[in-house]
Length: 448
Image 1 (cartoon, rainbow, N blue to C red):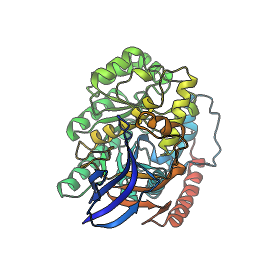
Image 2: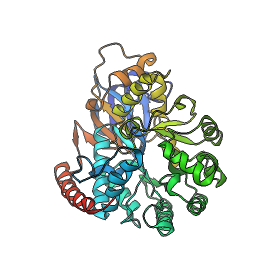
Image 3: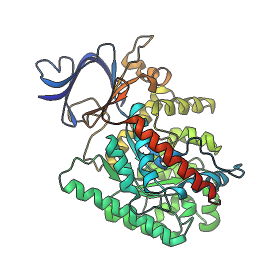
């Protein structure tokens, strides 16, 4: 017997080619799709039957770069100094927040970010974490929040020397390795583990050579990819030229940190030569349009040249419908040549990143047999014909998170008819507000 049968729904594939199949059925058994297509549900007995008439089914969206620790920052009430450049923004805001985090607040950040993602049609998140006052065990707290909600997720600790020098570097590397080993042990025990690990680093300008050496060792030891901000602002590039007399990408390559499972983030100030090296090594690069605009760091001129471009939010929530719209409009405002299909193609590549981070122990992003049952039912009613040829246009110009009616992750119906099925949302968000007030008070006492 199947666990879930979705009947008579329109399937829209969001990985190229963007195929539309009307009046289709999807059969879910366990955590994967067993059958999909016209008449796929004929003769199938199922514990749960969903009538998809008039609805659209898409693979769940993936966020390629998030900061779950930002979950409690919304509307943060602290006395902050001037924030007229990128470094001031970091020192006056984010680096005070992350130093105020503890185990409880990290866990609630993970819970609420995961829940909001599910509500907005995002079923997988690649997280990049920082909590300098609570390093050891922090990634397990993030993973617990993800798994308690039920999303697929990847996390890592952003190694940095910005507070306590090499001691802090070592603790960050050790936490990355510890969590990777913990994940491996769970998988070896036969658990269907919803999360996995990467080896994180903050940014090259807070990573001395010794840190890059330790991170390279951790990458080799664990078999994980590196997840690192690069050239988010020209400050990072200037720092590399000033103190190391070489481009950021050449420095990273010198330590053998550029691989086909490496995730680099932002890249706004990278040169054309550095983008060529990134492509040559097969790295992913996450574009975060909203964050770049918010931090006023400029526009990435080589966007169209990155072969493995993915889309993230850099902590601006998990709403990938909204992120893609703003990325598209900013690109057009900057005179860029891309159209909706190009941007939806980049968003769909987030599934390749997730598969890579999961070391290909699962397949994501298609409504086909054998793929993870990470699916979103939309109540979007197209005002014009929805065809395979214009599906990307409907996604960018029409569809939104408000259309999300139900979300299935790993074969479980987490969100049905716009309500969580297994979580007490009211209680969790009340607890998160309590934790946020405590964190804000602590952050307000921390000097930049």
